[in-house]
Length: 152
Image (cartoon, rainbow, N blue to C red; front, side):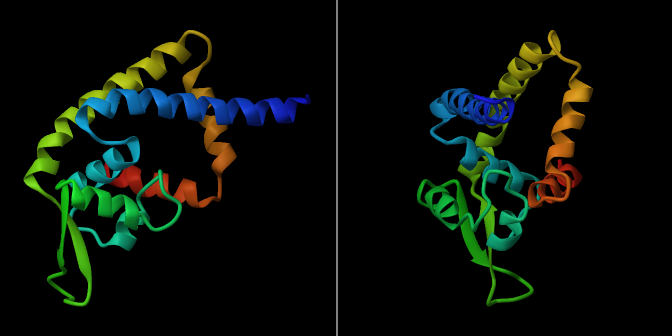
């Protein structure tokens, strides 16, 4: 195995293991990491159309319609007509969805603290973040992160 293969396998494995850990943390809340991201984005910037929401989600590269539909079914978000254009529907948090936000943030903070603690003793985080930013330079992911940083 060459270094390029090993790097690719390691990046994919770290993502997979991190997602598994975050899924376990969120399980008691009855939501997935992707669903938590939708709720957090809406909590900071609602109402949003499906397209606007999709442009802010890191977890989805396509339309988040199935993800949103599951959250509607579970009573965390609802759709309404946009005030400025009755042909357009927008998404809002329900009271149930809004009540979940502090618990999601608590789980996210635990996950982030774990990640920082596990890395900070072995690597300079600023350098590591710079390397990762370089790897996504000029991509759709970079644009989504920039948009998200403006609302977070």
